[in-house]
Image (cartoon, rainbow over all chains, first blue to last red):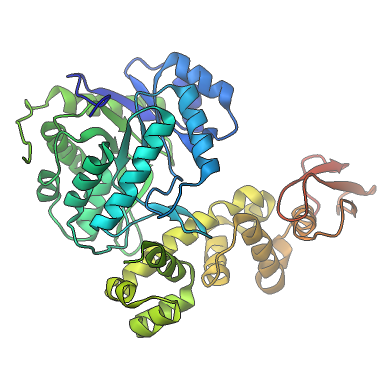
Length: 282
Length: 178
């Protein structure tokens, strides 16, 4: 895909949050790039965004474009998203394979869409529109959900179909894959090996949590566990097109030294990367 | 399949606990009640009620975490966990935007559970935002530890509704009235 070709280099960065601001201002040497959340800069904080773009390679990640909702994208959200992309100048933008609103209700959170060819066309068409409006490639992320919707495709095939139809890449959230595999009882490696390895451009990684009922949850509050690192190593080895790995953390933000350690662990994954085999599905 | 209808029906289930209870008892009847056609009914009847509930709680929690930002004094007094338990009871069956959640939850808490926790300043502010009547409103507050009253001046910034206002507090400092 134009603009998403592998470069041979895999950068490791973090998801920028205000709470990390003072650490980020020190320009930590091992943070090669930042991913910003577009909605945090909608109509505000443009000076901060400008500073970030002047000092870091940025990637813009959206939460609320609701690509899975049929019908036109919300024009105002798209306008604000485009403005953030203009200031941040990312190599690509990203969003989720999900819906966050219907025609009348904004649910305020990512919800799954059924894995069907029809929905793949809807998501892909919206992805193409966002890429065209922002004048940049787009990559899409797999979400985690307690709800498992059924359709006429397996989830990895659904993701491949969207990437192909939408001319977009995949932002593979390794933690979401792990969580879904534990909550919905499937083998994450089998799931992974059905994906087009060329489509995986970026990864998200964070520790999982457990709720009172024992479910695995994704509240971005924990350090990355060894089992997540183990799965991430498999993904890094598999993904031919991989270019960026982003460490996420929203809650219980640790001391900078702990963040440095986690980044170092992710850099080790890259250093240990086995030469990617040629896995193309075709 | 009508994708829009599918998402509308799924959303209705996610946002209404009563409907989820009915779905667990009789999926087809509930889906019909929500306007699902045959294709949408066939696609959604297999949802696992426990999983549906768990996803709904995630959405409810997302609504809840916005409230301490809107009602900081109230939640400081009430406590996060107690607030979450109360909010699940109050809001499980209904979806509203965050500002309306704040006012309804404050009203619920005042009336049923913990009147002492509500802050008069926050209460005045949210009643003003919910009430379309006035462009400007002045409240005289009597903090228990002061001899002189404090003043709270509220000025509407935009058309009526939950669209924001300016607030000026005179004589309170950073301490809320008790």
